[in-house]
Length: 610
Image (cartoon, rainbow, N blue to C red; front, side, top):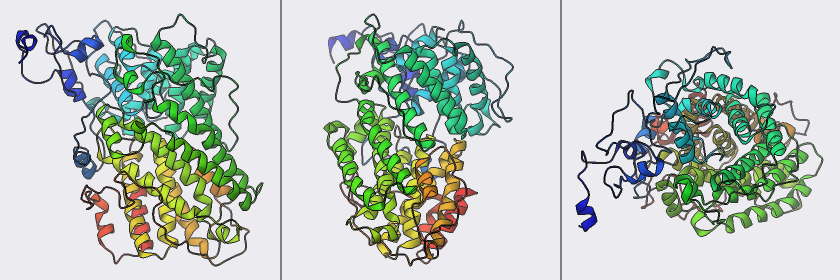
């Protein structure tokens, strides 16, 4: 034992301090021995201190709300590696001087929970926001700086309420008993929108960030018009501020928050354009304004330690490189569906976009590539969700790009040979694999509605295989992947009303496939909207005017892209290759091989839609 360690005073009790226990981080005493390094860096009370006073009221840590299998598997290590839970912030009460006011509100929707604004509950919800939403759906804030302002009573109430609107659904605090998780955020959103009124005429970084937060909430509610309105306001405020410009008198944290907010506005604008089947408006300024601070440092470091070094470990900067590809894929699908371009023309564009996607993936630094070692590393650092969100987006763009090739008639009519159907199925399988890891391992959760939509598109591909393929091995793997996706969607629909709307598409798609004998599977305008508009529900599809053709079954192909374990086998396998996951309430569907694919689909959809 070193002399320094020997000289440290003994702890008041064995084990980690309260903040490190909540975060499940190793608790390292500081040199003075009266507090730990984490609490010292965040300037928050440490329970190791002899002067520590217990705060009033419980601060509850949220465990994953899902099936019993998911609850159990969250605790399992990833291929033998230990994954520590890394909630985004220490759960400590704000000082008593932090005053919050309650207001009589006009609710967003009739059903509402009480507006709970005690500092303890608000800090819990802000912590849950940083854990489950921030750096998954968008990147706006330096967490340590925001929590410090909160504890000092200087945090923006507009931001606090908007964060709570997004995160209240994750809380297990008993104050929300009796209110469905998906409804808890409405009262906080109503307060946030009320507070925003005072900012609309005076654009600021604060108002821009608030509009992004409220826009994401409205998207999760399935309120498409409101979502577009707030994202549009965010863009207007950002452009008015010239958010991409960097005044020299700003701190590193302030400059980086401007960069990340500007990128989040650009991302929201692209997804909003796709929702309405229009081309994204050009961004004449700030296209090269990307995050400059390393993601790990920005997630964990004291603001005084941050450096703008354009580090390679910057997932958000790399994700920005896929925005134009995503937009181009969406535009081509829309043009193909309206017969503006022929299928042959589409086929000539596909290799170019495939090349761009593969160039993006190949250009990732080694530490950001999709493999088990990197996932383990980022999960242990609290960024497993960001890592998986980056890669699930990549595979989603691929499954969108190749989706038209599921139309057997289109494949037969083109003069350009392609393995597009196999590529679509391969990409959909990779989406299912990522979803499975997100369900099973701590710090990798993708409990956000956009990923529910991505899982629905993946499920449509598996449904197509089950209903139209005759290859027994292909049917078996599609069955497993579909049930796994459904299990994920079941847990997600409890949290987000929008996911319920997305899930409703599956029954429509099933009917679409069933009718393919008399009405061939074809990517018409309805189908293009079906797979691209993640926050809207296409109208009822009209009967196709195409002539009836016998469907041509797509041949089975080996998976083109290797999974995390280096092979294209079943998801959720352990190091020996044997199935390591149980299938929960749907296990009987998998074990009963006597059930037809049609029966599997019917039972699974009935279970999911009940």
